[in-house]
Amino acid sequence: MTGRVLVTGATGFVGRNVILSLLRRGKTVVGFSADAVAGFSPPALVCEAGDFVEVTGDVRDRDRLVEILRSYNVDQVIHLAAITPSGSDEVRLAQAAMDINVGGTAAVTQAVIECGIRQFVLASSVAVYGGGHPDGSWLDEEMPHAPATLYAISKDAAEKVVQRLGSQAGLDWKIGRLGRVFGPFEYETGVRATMSQIFIATEAAKAGRKVKFSRPCLKTWHYAPDAAEALVMLLDVRNPASRIYNLGSPHVWSLAEWCSHLKSIYPDFEYEITASDPVDDEILIDLNGTTDGGNLSSDRFVREIGSMPTRTLAAAFEDYVVQPPTDRAEGVHR
Image (cartoon, rainbow, N blue to C red; front, side, top):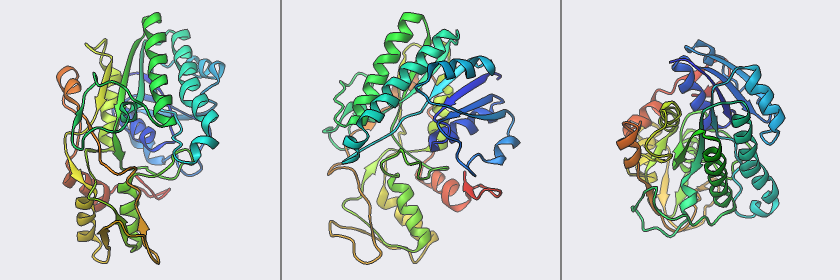
């Protein structure tokens, strides 16, 4: 497989996993982000089969995007760049969220069309379905949208922008909706409201700190390298039967089960399922609401694209915690 791929949001943790997946397929990858992150462009990437270059710019700047797409002869694009405000940050970051998540998507889509690029993937989110779904229910692509947060509203709008412009221009566009992603390269980017609950628990275990959370939290957690593989698979399929796909793991397990695995590696680690407030050095993990809600069904993806790349809890834990490959030059977990 050959090709030159632009990845927006390249310094985000999903972006880094997407880049690694593309490089392993022999792709030339242009990582596009607002700012280069010092010490976070892993030299280990150059050991992969493909070539990697990092460029900076504003995702809302169509002219800059066109310049980059043409300079590097890009023929595929995966658009991940977004900010995820929540809670009180919604008011403070309202304009930025809409400008970047919706305006940036419009600019990227316009640039892709202007440069004659045919294959384009937008990374969207389970958030477009809104809340209120029964715990453990499965959400398919035909479920009505009910975005409740500003982030969800912006992702819903971004999807509509791609659908409209892509269909008008004859673009081979696809949308992949991500669920509860966790894993390698996760770090404080400054544009994510919170880290994944798995990340918080894992870092607490390493630091010997106790965590508390109000319920077991049963979800279909999607390991970041697997979610990245699904996006890349979606990118390379030509004119699929559908245009929109849920990228969700079929494996259901709880945060409590993950913490039990952590305790087997870090015996001094403590966790407690309780509604009580944290004391001393304890960490209260926010579960984002009072229910677990619905899970993304990957049935359409499996039926039309191929097997959904997903690790079980045990396999993800082994790769992420027990034997995590590290970039020794930078000390960044991959």
